[in-house]
Length: 229
Image (cartoon, rainbow, N blue to C red; front, side):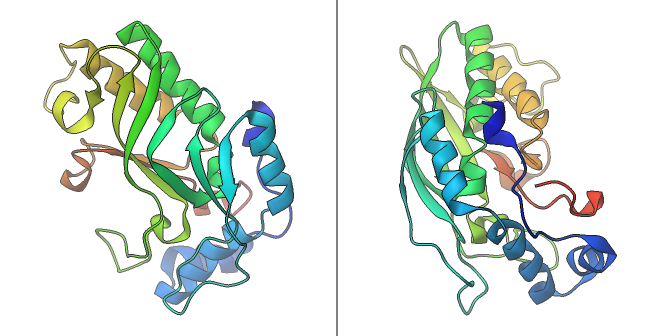
């Protein structure tokens, strides 16, 4: 599992000029850094790692450059089933480098579910993955969704019993949720935040746009000068 979380090798954003472009540049400069962060991945090695981890997927054609709007997935995959048997509804359309984090993401899901629901999760409902659009707030920069580098997780269904749904059970105004499903969602959020391979986790308590899902992505950690994948 650990091998599936290593940073991609090869050229990637780095140095003060890349940091300045990413943090303070215009939309085009930032989008170029976002693209290069993913395009530097070794696609063949990444997909081999997915197969070894037991991820069920099909490969999309690799892209040499983004489309005219600046969007696209450099090394896309369509994931239908994860390494712990989770079925994704709808399938994940993401860059391979993000799919490579699924062993860790699903370990977080299953650990929180076992602790609070007494059973494992078999199906996860999503609000989407790839979408060519800007971030919902900010300077008009492209979202990580525009590169297949983000997943919105909304519903977690165990083998038996009702699902834990973020919009219904997160209890955003409660310091400590008073239901097992609420406690599962809170612990899951914390576990996701602790993953080395996940850069951002945004949930109901961050802003109202995320009141009904957890956004996770593997954006370039520009504050570390590009040294991480």
